[in-house]
Image 1: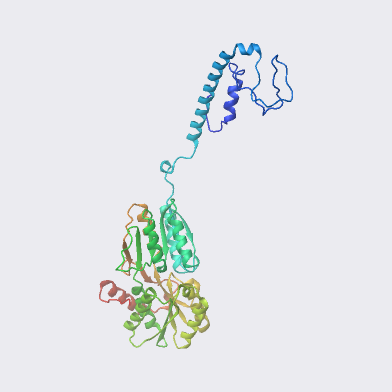
Image 2: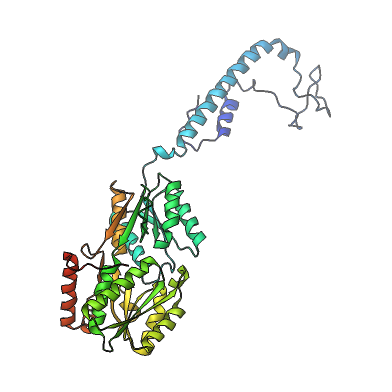
Length: 414
């Protein structure tokens, strides 16, 4: 009997084996009417023409005499064919893809859903992207990301990643994901989730498969508020927020408190671009508000407005003012006009959460807080801007940092 050695063997080869076997070549089922080139025999063995209604050929008298033996041999051929076909299908199934549970585990994959502005915002989303790229380089993970354009798109993007078996961890980047990611985490209890700037409600427990990644923005804002108050030449500084919300209020409150702590007589102007998430992606409004505050005497403006801040920077260029960037180091966006940036190490938060997931140490149901002490928030002081900041001012801000970390200064957040 022929042995099948690989999955390239075709069923037709098995049939040819049976047809070419000299012991059984004359005992295969007789041709049917589907072969019109073959004609049926008459009782005397003569060919009959034009009659194709019967299914089997008639047998010659000599064949009738050997019919019992032929039938016995025919059964043997059928048995051989059955065994051959069974071997083929068993071997073929062995070459097919193994069930997922038997496959060699592949690279861990992460799903990242970005905030408004998407990749290239030079701020919040880009910080998240840096974190996931670092995880790919240092931890060997793979990732995919989506840039939704509306509330329904955000929910759909989260659900799309959550439902995929090849995704091990899903991130929502921004406080506007809070409700959607909480709901979806409950719908997919076996999936793991992380949410940057998750809005914690003491009355609502965080799902056990979701970790809230939060920052003490007020502490970093306190430092840049003190810096601006110590640097202003007009006695007036400004703040421009994106969406007026509890999160952005933390930036404002910390900034104003830091400014008043360092310079009690300083005046702080405050404006917001809007009350919806669209306020984070309106550079035109940012420029309008920036021009207005510079026009009212501010010479330094801290923006916490995402891509809307690009308009504030444009206003700074026109009015020769200074801007304090947010989330990432924004000096490259307006060299010479960015005094500093209040940075949130979103990249570290993303990286550390991925690392914990890969090492089997993921902890959900809790809020992980990144503060000044853990370098979760900070301000930029490097070769690009240190020439703009006098040593005396820098030293004073560093003293304030130490007092916040020690607890001597309690920074308000609302």
